[in-house]
Image 1 (spheres, rainbow, N blue to C red):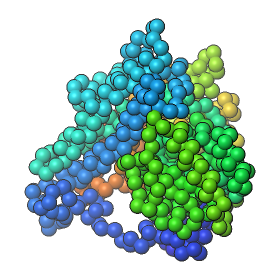
Image 2 (cartoon, one colour; image 1 turned 90 degrees about the vertical axis):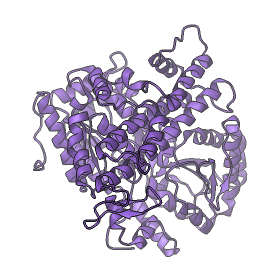
Image 3 (cartoon, rainbow, N blue to C red; image 1 turned 60 degrees about the horizontal axis):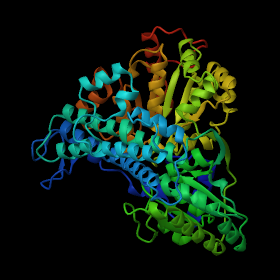
Image 4 (cartoon, rainbow, N blue to C red; image 1 turned 45 degrees about the horizontal axis):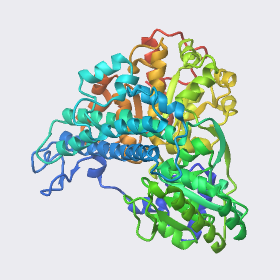
Length: 638
């Protein structure tokens, strides 16, 4: 193991990396080190591969590419292509959920049912659907149709901003042309604009990147969350556990990995089937555990209370335990290396999406029309593989957590059943008990010590009376460290936040779901604004966001739509923009004049948290809120 950088703060991860080293199995951490020093042009965003005359490298001696593109154009083009890819990944997820709801309502999907009729009626109302006298199925067909239309819409603007966001914010978006025509329309336009010989104005390029990102946060991802809650049921606070220790040597262990809940929900159901449980007993297993990695983990955690095996960088380490009988993968964040690891053990790797095949894995094509049958077939494969295990070594590390928070159920926690609202949250901020709210999201990256950025940032925010909401792999990091237990408030929170958590019984860090569920955070901000007392625009709120261990294009698009929505966002590692001072200045300064939000690229997580706190204090001063009740606990960043 290299002594250059500690690889993880998670003892379970460290234990399994040591085992992998003994078995001469390379992990992502090893492959990262073998890459050595990276291309400086690529790191700065100065390598242009848009056309076949290149690639071109922008240098002091050669300040333009073959076509004459300057550094700012090259950097901006490649950056907004990343935005488009991230938006496509999230929104394609939303498209699949909308399609599944439609065929479920038509009776064409096996095993599914509309589990939240109440949420169906609420969302249908926002879309202007008259529900009077209509069946649940007819309403769902009409709603899913309207949602699907958002993807290919060619005129007008996406629907949800106007019905959910504050009027002043929507007016500002319209003023600056930041509302997309349709989800796919603006992704396609991004690819057109960045083709050779089209848009060369970095500001124009970046503004379109912000517009494209809005089609994710305020349409694709928001649709995925809304319709997922209708189809699979609205999450409720649930106790579960996280880390590699959730697997058991005497149970069949199935790990679902990826981002689509459509099949994983059926796998959980199949694992509880009496016939399959009987087969497991015949094979010598005491039961079946279905646990998750990445956002599939969060999907089944939020609704089923399924345990979390780990976050992004745990996928190879889980297999190295020798206890994974089958790893089921769908789309996004799946390393092809899992197949190589599985070959060293007894683990079966099964791919399920036509969009994501891996050589060496068994492919079982998922089809919603046969969903439960396919899920049962996959679970049986895991059960039949159980007797083929060799040495099993499961780390003895597992942590309790509480997850399952949504905007709706947080209303009830804060205000009670008969006066459910965000009033207590707003009052806490207005009176100075709470400084503000921070959303800490994102992935793991081998460029940083696993989980360290999330933990250091969140602990600094909590100390300074900031309520933290989380999604994705960042949420798993804090769950593993015990920050998602109500008891954590006493150990980590400032006095003001501690008082609120103790009063309402909430953890100081709220788990809001998978990465598409960042849309829940946007809706929560809208509710804070609607509740009153904190300004008339989203950008007036004392809030901030961060991705302290960003890894992929999805993190970039999330950062973009949060800044477009008026948030201060600390993003690290820094995007590949340092080759252009103009682009960096636009993202960290100029955009604030347009949206009220901006990026910060502070690498140190504690310093990043303090910059977020500084931003909240600026917003508090502008709103003329009362001083903080308790002393500020750090020296402000100069």
